Length: 97
Image (cartoon, rainbow, N blue to C red):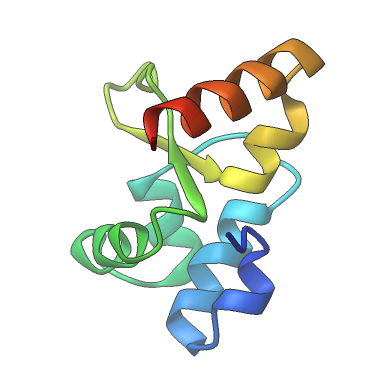
């Protein structure tokens, strides 16, 4: 499973969204923030995020504004503790059998 968005994304508009998700100033981004950064409307952002569920992670907790938050799956995984990584690996492999 490829989680490096640079290897999976080739479209100009999609690249803008993923560059905004990768911006080191922000851990999580809202649809509104991604829209401002990329120039795409909210529905265009949602369409791109839904197209690449392996690359994007939605937060279980919304922003203070109530908006959903998103980050790169690779960034989320990199920040997990060793225990969380092992648990994620074990639980996803056992649920797929």
